[in-house]
Image (cartoon, rainbow, N blue to C red; front, side):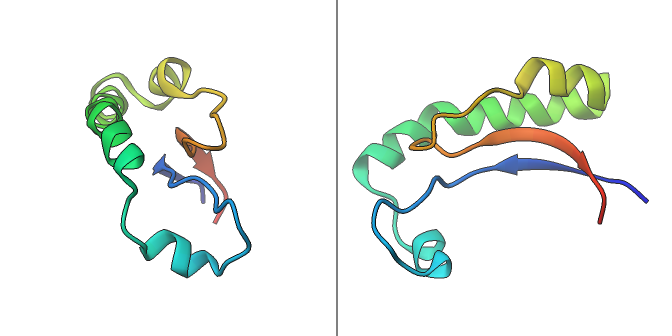
Length: 79
């Protein structure tokens, strides 16, 4: 069984820390500013996935992410 998911990344810590601490901490002002552009893009990717299908959405929205921005993509995975 394959599962599909929309993934919206949170980047990686610049210093050694527990992943849960990194994911649950507040956004920095720079990250909050970046979200202003990324959230609408994620919503557009979801629309494309729902209305155009997985493959067209993946072709349109998957990108090589800058590690400081965190990844965003649509993918199909094995559980």
